[in-house]
Length: 358
Image (cartoon, rainbow, N blue to C red; front, top):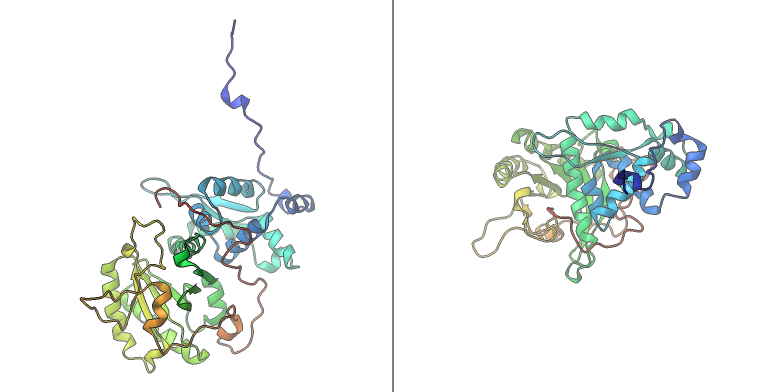
């Protein structure tokens, strides 16, 4: 006769606990990680160091074929203290898990480049402080912009062959190079059949006045004059209504610039994306150059890769990877501890399916 019932959780395999904080930086733990971390893991650690925080959905878009594989690997990285995580409060529903670089991950990055962790300027408490930063939503929004582009380029599609993000600099890297003139939210390069487009991104959440947003063009004009490089500035806005107001303010400032061709401008809005599409992204045909005129016959909107056609006098982007020194406003090369990570993980496989609800 059965007199007791074995509980289900007692039948499961023992789950390992998280590595202790003191042990995370030990020689023994680093030796164990050497046998566990893949090239993709190390790429992800570099991406978190560069961009401070990424959500689980963004990490999946950038590097994993499914939400299950992303969750499993991120859990392992968390248990090894290679990454840390937090979940912001939401009034309704629950926010996705947010990931930052952990102490063991910082030690791995430093060792790869022959540095001490202190040379990276890394501190775990500062890394986690982004959880309470007022610019968290803005930082996550910029991450959404680029990871959705990366996700699009990872999908096999003969029509979009050759598309991809070839560079993604963080706000902090941009600030180190030309922060004395302007601090873009990001610098990026997008490759497509039409060529390669390099751009500065201004990600607008609607919290700033349109006057302040439009006056950024004056700083970009000074940057173009200092570097001798005309680089398009893309303004990503939350709604079409906000975009309409921003375009009016931007046109007023842009018309007063000495060399308007040095600061090409285009705008787009989040609610222009087709939510029913398989992979909606900023690469879609939603960009409207500032000099475009509405037409009843054809749409004045361009795909991201087609924007170079809107500015025929724009010099083509260099075919090689961007040279950080060429954008330095000091005119001298600036040595940095870590180079920007590549836009595609070294061992990521193209994904065919998109996570539900995205």
